[in-house]
Length: 280
Ligand code: AMP
Ligand code: ZN
Ligand code: FE
Ligand code: FE
Image (cartoon, rainbow, N blue to C red):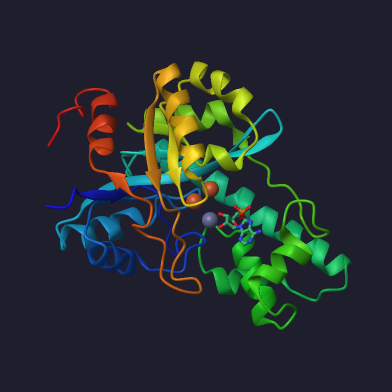
Protein backbone atom coordinates (compact mmCIF):
# COMPACT_ATOMS: atom_id res chain seq x y z
CA UNK A 1 0.00 0.00 0.00
CA UNK A 2 1.18 3.51 -0.77
CA UNK A 3 2.38 5.49 2.24
CA UNK A 4 -0.17 8.03 3.47
CA UNK A 5 0.71 11.61 2.55
CA UNK A 6 -0.25 14.96 4.02
CA UNK A 7 -0.23 18.64 2.99
CA UNK A 8 0.28 21.19 5.77
CA UNK A 9 0.26 24.46 3.82
CA UNK A 10 -2.97 25.44 2.06
CA UNK A 11 -4.98 28.59 1.39
CA UNK A 12 -8.67 29.30 0.71
CA UNK A 13 -10.70 32.35 -0.24
CA UNK A 14 -10.63 33.38 3.44
CA UNK A 15 -7.26 34.88 2.44
CA UNK A 16 -5.65 34.99 -1.01
CA UNK A 17 -6.54 31.49 -2.20
CA UNK A 18 -9.33 30.94 -4.71
CA UNK A 19 -10.79 27.65 -3.40
CA UNK A 20 -13.64 27.40 -0.92
CA UNK A 21 -12.92 25.11 2.07
CA UNK A 22 -15.14 22.47 0.45
CA UNK A 23 -13.13 22.64 -2.78
CA UNK A 24 -9.91 22.13 -0.78
CA UNK A 25 -11.39 19.08 0.96
CA UNK A 26 -12.54 17.64 -2.37
CA UNK A 27 -9.10 18.20 -3.92
CA UNK A 28 -7.45 16.59 -0.86
CA UNK A 29 -9.72 13.57 -1.27
CA UNK A 30 -8.85 13.35 -4.95
CA UNK A 31 -5.14 13.33 -4.02
CA UNK A 32 -5.87 10.69 -1.36
CA UNK A 33 -4.29 12.77 1.39
CA UNK A 34 -4.53 11.40 4.93
CA UNK A 35 -4.33 14.80 6.63
CA UNK A 36 -4.28 18.49 5.73
CA UNK A 37 -3.92 21.82 7.48
CA UNK A 38 -5.43 25.16 6.49
CA UNK A 39 -2.88 27.99 6.82
CA UNK A 40 -4.63 31.07 5.49
CA UNK A 41 -2.75 34.36 5.90
CA UNK A 42 -3.48 36.03 9.24
CA UNK A 43 -6.81 34.30 9.82
CA UNK A 44 -8.32 31.10 11.21
CA UNK A 45 -11.80 31.86 9.90
CA UNK A 46 -11.90 29.08 7.31
CA UNK A 47 -10.90 26.34 9.76
CA UNK A 48 -14.32 25.31 11.13
CA UNK A 49 -15.72 24.91 7.58
CA UNK A 50 -12.74 22.92 6.37
CA UNK A 51 -12.78 20.78 9.54
CA UNK A 52 -16.37 19.82 8.74
CA UNK A 53 -15.67 19.14 5.06
CA UNK A 54 -12.68 16.97 6.03
CA UNK A 55 -14.65 15.04 8.66
CA UNK A 56 -17.20 14.15 5.98
CA UNK A 57 -14.38 12.66 3.89
CA UNK A 58 -12.43 10.97 6.68
CA UNK A 59 -9.45 13.29 6.24
CA UNK A 60 -7.64 14.41 9.39
CA UNK A 61 -7.70 18.20 9.77
CA UNK A 62 -5.21 20.39 11.64
CA UNK A 63 -6.38 23.98 12.30
CA UNK A 64 -3.62 26.40 11.30
CA UNK A 65 -2.66 29.85 10.09
CA UNK A 66 0.22 31.69 8.40
CA UNK A 67 1.07 34.89 10.26
CA UNK A 68 3.02 37.73 8.67
CA UNK A 69 5.59 38.92 11.20
CA UNK A 70 8.76 41.01 11.16
CA UNK A 71 12.22 40.03 12.31
CA UNK A 72 15.04 42.54 12.17
CA UNK A 73 13.39 44.52 9.36
CA UNK A 74 12.49 41.43 7.27
CA UNK A 75 8.97 40.08 6.75
CA UNK A 76 8.70 36.38 7.45
CA UNK A 77 5.81 33.94 7.57
CA UNK A 78 5.10 31.98 10.70
CA UNK A 79 2.92 28.90 10.44
CA UNK A 80 0.78 27.96 13.46
CA UNK A 81 -0.50 24.37 13.82
CA UNK A 82 -2.95 22.64 16.18
CA UNK A 83 -4.53 25.96 17.09
CA UNK A 84 -7.57 26.32 19.30
CA UNK A 85 -9.68 28.37 16.89
CA UNK A 86 -11.91 29.54 19.77
CA UNK A 87 -8.92 31.02 21.60
CA UNK A 88 -9.99 34.59 22.39
CA UNK A 89 -6.56 36.15 22.15
CA UNK A 90 -5.93 34.46 18.82
CA UNK A 91 -9.23 35.71 17.40
CA UNK A 92 -8.61 39.20 18.77
CA UNK A 93 -4.98 39.50 17.66
CA UNK A 94 -5.52 38.12 14.17
CA UNK A 95 -8.06 40.90 13.62
CA UNK A 96 -5.13 43.32 14.16
CA UNK A 97 -3.05 41.47 11.58
CA UNK A 98 -6.02 41.73 9.21
CA UNK A 99 -6.22 45.50 9.81
CA UNK A 100 -2.54 45.74 8.82
CA UNK A 101 -3.41 43.95 5.57
CA UNK A 102 -6.33 46.30 4.86
CA UNK A 103 -4.10 49.32 5.53
CA UNK A 104 -1.45 47.86 3.23
CA UNK A 105 -3.97 47.52 0.39
CA UNK A 106 -4.91 51.19 0.89
CA UNK A 107 -1.19 52.04 0.65
CA UNK A 108 -0.74 50.02 -2.55
CA UNK A 109 -3.81 51.61 -4.18
CA UNK A 110 -2.57 55.03 -3.16
CA UNK A 111 0.77 54.39 -4.86
CA UNK A 112 -1.00 53.09 -7.97
CA UNK A 113 -3.15 56.23 -8.07
CA UNK A 114 -0.03 58.41 -7.75
CA UNK A 115 1.28 56.61 -10.84
CA UNK A 116 -1.94 57.40 -12.71
CA UNK A 117 -3.48 53.92 -12.41
CA UNK A 118 -7.13 54.55 -11.52
CA UNK A 119 -7.81 51.48 -9.37
CA UNK A 120 -9.99 52.11 -6.31
CA UNK A 121 -9.63 50.42 -2.94
CA UNK A 122 -13.22 49.21 -3.29
CA UNK A 123 -12.29 47.48 -6.56
CA UNK A 124 -9.91 45.40 -4.45
CA UNK A 125 -12.11 44.89 -1.37
CA UNK A 126 -15.18 43.95 -3.45
CA UNK A 127 -13.12 41.34 -5.27
CA UNK A 128 -11.33 40.03 -2.16
CA UNK A 129 -14.51 39.71 -0.06
CA UNK A 130 -12.41 38.59 2.90
CA UNK A 131 -10.88 40.06 6.03
CA UNK A 132 -7.29 39.24 5.05
CA UNK A 133 -6.76 40.95 1.67
CA UNK A 134 -3.33 40.88 0.03
CA UNK A 135 -1.34 41.67 -3.07
CA UNK A 136 -2.85 38.80 -5.10
CA UNK A 137 -6.25 40.50 -4.69
CA UNK A 138 -4.79 43.81 -5.89
CA UNK A 139 -3.26 41.94 -8.85
CA UNK A 140 -6.59 40.30 -9.73
CA UNK A 141 -8.40 43.66 -9.42
CA UNK A 142 -5.82 45.26 -11.76
CA UNK A 143 -6.61 42.54 -14.32
CA UNK A 144 -10.37 42.75 -13.81
CA UNK A 145 -10.39 46.54 -14.26
CA UNK A 146 -8.27 46.24 -17.40
CA UNK A 147 -5.04 47.82 -16.11
CA UNK A 148 -3.00 44.62 -16.61
CA UNK A 149 -3.25 41.62 -18.89
CA UNK A 150 -2.33 39.09 -16.20
CA UNK A 151 -1.59 38.87 -12.48
CA UNK A 152 2.05 38.10 -13.36
CA UNK A 153 2.21 41.40 -15.19
CA UNK A 154 0.58 43.14 -12.20
CA UNK A 155 3.27 41.78 -9.88
CA UNK A 156 6.20 42.49 -12.16
CA UNK A 157 5.08 46.01 -13.13
CA UNK A 158 3.62 47.19 -9.85
CA UNK A 159 3.48 44.87 -6.85
CA UNK A 160 6.65 42.81 -6.44
CA UNK A 161 8.99 44.00 -3.72
CA UNK A 162 10.88 46.96 -5.12
CA UNK A 163 8.32 47.65 -7.86
CA UNK A 164 6.95 51.21 -8.02
CA UNK A 165 3.62 50.57 -6.26
CA UNK A 166 5.07 48.29 -3.57
CA UNK A 167 4.73 49.41 0.02
CA UNK A 168 5.69 47.37 3.08
CA UNK A 169 3.09 45.90 5.39
CA UNK A 170 3.26 46.79 9.08
CA UNK A 171 3.69 43.50 10.93
CA UNK A 172 3.82 42.32 14.50
CA UNK A 173 7.18 41.27 15.94
CA UNK A 174 8.01 37.59 15.42
CA UNK A 175 8.27 36.99 19.19
CA UNK A 176 4.66 38.16 19.59
CA UNK A 177 3.61 35.81 16.79
CA UNK A 178 5.32 32.81 18.39
CA UNK A 179 3.74 33.63 21.77
CA UNK A 180 0.32 34.08 20.21
CA UNK A 181 0.52 30.63 18.60
CA UNK A 182 1.80 29.00 21.79
CA UNK A 183 -0.87 30.49 24.05
CA UNK A 184 -3.49 29.11 21.60
CA UNK A 185 -2.05 25.61 22.13
CA UNK A 186 -0.15 25.52 18.84
CA UNK A 187 3.27 24.90 17.33
CA UNK A 188 5.13 27.75 15.59
CA UNK A 189 6.96 26.86 12.38
CA UNK A 190 8.96 29.11 10.05
CA UNK A 191 7.33 28.95 6.59
CA UNK A 192 9.40 28.45 3.42
CA UNK A 193 12.77 29.52 4.90
CA UNK A 194 14.32 29.06 1.46
CA UNK A 195 12.37 32.07 0.18
CA UNK A 196 13.75 34.34 2.91
CA UNK A 197 17.43 35.17 3.09
CA UNK A 198 17.48 35.17 6.87
CA UNK A 199 19.03 31.86 7.92
CA UNK A 200 21.37 33.80 10.22
CA UNK A 201 18.32 34.84 12.27
CA UNK A 202 17.06 31.29 12.85
CA UNK A 203 19.01 30.91 16.14
CA UNK A 204 17.19 33.99 17.47
CA UNK A 205 13.87 32.44 16.49
CA UNK A 206 14.82 29.23 18.28
CA UNK A 207 15.61 31.31 21.38
CA UNK A 208 12.13 32.83 21.12
CA UNK A 209 10.51 29.39 21.07
CA UNK A 210 10.27 28.46 17.40
CA UNK A 211 9.22 24.80 17.11
CA UNK A 212 10.02 23.92 13.53
CA UNK A 213 11.08 24.65 9.96
CA UNK A 214 9.00 24.06 6.84
CA UNK A 215 11.47 21.93 4.87
CA UNK A 216 9.33 20.70 1.99
CA UNK A 217 7.67 23.44 -0.05
CA UNK A 218 6.76 23.86 -3.72
CA UNK A 219 9.52 26.42 -4.16
CA UNK A 220 12.20 24.48 -2.24
CA UNK A 221 14.42 22.35 -4.48
CA UNK A 222 15.56 19.05 -2.95
CA UNK A 223 18.88 20.52 -1.84
CA UNK A 224 17.06 23.30 0.05
CA UNK A 225 14.79 20.80 1.82
CA UNK A 226 17.88 18.83 2.81
CA UNK A 227 19.67 21.91 4.12
CA UNK A 228 16.76 22.81 6.40
CA UNK A 229 16.30 19.24 7.58
CA UNK A 230 19.91 19.28 8.72
CA UNK A 231 19.45 22.65 10.35
CA UNK A 232 16.32 21.44 12.14
CA UNK A 233 18.30 18.48 13.45
CA UNK A 234 21.00 20.78 14.75
CA UNK A 235 18.56 23.01 16.62
CA UNK A 236 16.19 20.30 17.82
CA UNK A 237 13.34 21.54 15.65
CA UNK A 238 10.55 19.59 14.02
CA UNK A 239 10.25 19.57 10.24
CA UNK A 240 7.04 20.17 8.28
CA UNK A 241 6.00 20.57 4.67
CA UNK A 242 3.22 21.59 2.34
CA UNK A 243 2.43 22.79 -1.15
CA UNK A 244 1.29 26.38 -0.36
CA UNK A 245 -1.58 25.75 -2.79
CA UNK A 246 -3.61 28.89 -3.53
CA UNK A 247 -6.19 27.25 -5.81
CA UNK A 248 -6.30 25.94 -9.34
CA UNK A 249 -4.17 28.69 -10.90
CA UNK A 250 -3.40 27.99 -14.54
CA UNK A 251 -3.50 24.21 -14.35
CA UNK A 252 -3.85 21.52 -11.73
CA UNK A 253 -3.83 22.77 -8.12
CA UNK A 254 -0.60 22.24 -6.18
CA UNK A 255 -2.29 20.49 -3.26
CA UNK A 256 -0.65 17.14 -2.54
CA UNK A 257 2.18 17.62 -5.03
CA UNK A 258 4.85 18.11 -2.35
CA UNK A 259 5.25 14.64 -0.88
CA UNK A 260 5.12 14.88 2.91
CA UNK A 261 4.84 11.57 4.80
CA UNK A 262 2.29 11.12 7.61
CA UNK A 263 5.07 10.44 10.18
CA UNK A 264 5.82 14.16 10.10
CA UNK A 265 2.44 14.80 11.70
CA UNK A 266 3.12 12.18 14.37
CA UNK A 267 6.38 13.94 15.25
CA UNK A 268 4.51 17.25 15.47
CA UNK A 269 1.99 15.72 17.87
CA UNK A 270 4.82 14.48 20.06
CA UNK A 271 6.10 18.06 20.28
CA UNK A 272 2.74 19.40 21.52
CA UNK A 273 2.47 20.29 25.18
CA UNK A 274 0.32 17.82 27.13
CA UNK A 275 -2.61 17.12 27.34
CA UNK A 276 -2.72 17.44 23.55
CA UNK A 277 0.27 15.15 23.16
CA UNK A 278 -1.84 11.98 23.14
CA UNK A 279 -1.48 10.39 19.73
CA UNK A 280 -4.71 9.33 18.11
P1 AMP B 1 1.03 39.75 0.62
O1 AMP B 1 0.91 38.83 1.80
O2 AMP B 1 -0.15 40.62 0.46
O3 AMP B 1 2.33 40.52 0.61
O4 AMP B 1 1.06 38.81 -0.67
C1 AMP B 1 1.92 37.72 -0.70
C2 AMP B 1 1.34 36.66 -1.59
O5 AMP B 1 1.41 37.10 -2.93
C3 AMP B 1 2.12 35.36 -1.54
O6 AMP B 1 1.53 34.45 -0.63
C4 AMP B 1 2.02 34.83 -2.94
O7 AMP B 1 0.84 34.03 -3.02
C5 AMP B 1 1.78 36.05 -3.80
N1 AMP B 1 2.96 36.52 -4.53
C6 AMP B 1 4.08 37.08 -4.04
N2 AMP B 1 4.93 37.43 -5.02
C7 AMP B 1 4.34 37.10 -6.18
C8 AMP B 1 4.71 37.21 -7.57
N3 AMP B 1 5.89 37.77 -7.95
N4 AMP B 1 3.84 36.74 -8.49
C9 AMP B 1 2.67 36.20 -8.11
N5 AMP B 1 2.26 36.06 -6.83
C10 AMP B 1 3.08 36.50 -5.87
ZN1 ZN C 1 -0.70 33.74 -0.21
FE1 FE D 1 4.04 32.48 2.80
FE1 FE E 1 1.23 30.41 2.20
